Length: 232
Image 1 (spheres, rainbow, N blue to C red):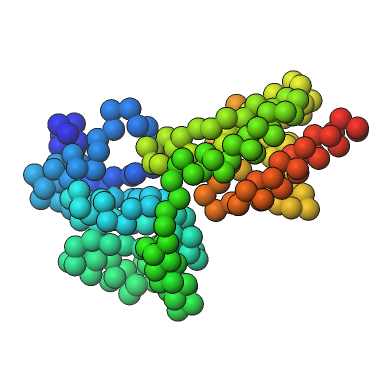
Image 2 (image 1 turned 90 degrees about the horizontal axis):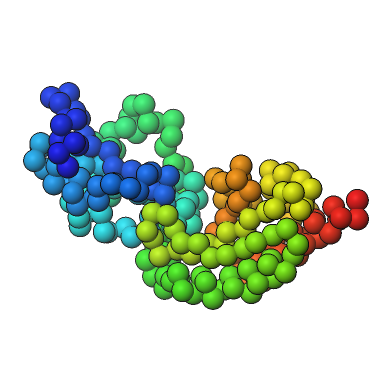
């Protein structure tokens, strides 16, 4: 908190807090600590919670504005959602009259996002344990393939989200992970992974919106691709 305070000057308009697995988590201030610094210096705290699932937690912890993606956890159309204190929300709305006008969401998108939010609030959330249960057969099947190791990994930002991590042994497979990923993207069934560690031979499968049957389809596609390479 002291370091964040020291960075604030009379020119500081706000503090922007990025809540994401892309941010380094070690020694990372939590939202409540950042809100304390913001209050002390009289500047608003804006939390970028794009992929987060709790639409109330960060405001409750002291954020003045919280930004969510309508197309990530909420599973709506391409859009954004801003919640927060009335004064700051009114300022955000003024952007539709200026530099933000080109990024305005159309009427259809607004209706789609509204319905998605209603569904998101009403439907029961899937827990990490349920995700593990769903992906276990998928992981077991992958581990039977030569040159592949799969396991459960947990969200790096601390959310209750479990994913399947797949490690491709490039020496055994005779091709790079990038080549495998590209082949699966361009197959008859397009499959996209979280590829942040593809250069290390590792991809992740986010199973939140994927059924057990679809996971099995992904496995079959991987198996077919590798068998095709062996025959070639």
